[in-house]
Structure formats: C-alpha cells, structure tokens
Image (cartoon, rainbow, N blue to C red; front, side, top):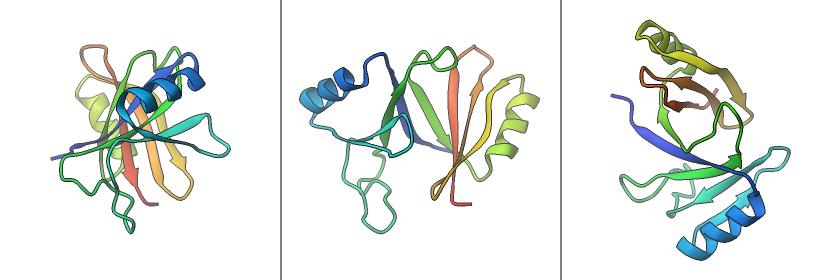
Length: 126
C-alpha cells in the first residue's frame, strides 16, 4: 500500500506565505537553490534519512501556484513514478506532469484522479 509522504501548498506570494506559516505554525522554511521551491519542515527529521522522526508525520513544501497546481497537493510515495502513472491512466486518471527527476532526491510527477483532483507522486532515490 502506497502512503502519503509529502504535501505542497501553492502560493501567489512566496515571501508572504513563508512569513504566514512560520508565524502561525512555527514551521522552519528553507529555500531550495536553483528551484522555485521552499521546503516546509513541520516536524523533526532523522538526520540520516531526512525523513520525519515521528511516525505518521510528514513535511512538505511551498511552491508557485500554476494552472496545473492551483490547490494544495497531497503526494503519495511510490516505488516508481513512471509505473504509478501507468496505473493512474489505466484506472481512468490523467498524467499532469510526467516523471521528473529531482537531483539527489528521486523523482516526482503529478496526476489528475477520477474526480479532477491533482495529486503528486514521489519515488525516493535514483
């Protein structure tokens, strides 16, 4: 069974959103060099794996809002983004963003489910 491993919140003003989430919830926010992306640390991580130390907790990110990602995204961890996207299509969903590598981390993709919701996929490593 593939579980939820990450979330993404689209923003219209990244600086304003960073200030909001840091102030309202105490999240630690860190920009990613060479990407229009901010890591949102909502819980402590294991220093070795960089995964949340608390069972069931997830971290996420802030990103620019786009026509493909207008609303918050729930991201599901999978073994292979490409294989998961094939299953999505076979089940009646649509690929929004094909498998896209993230250097040193793995790969991601976005899909639209049967109800029109956009969700994410993430496969660690590569």
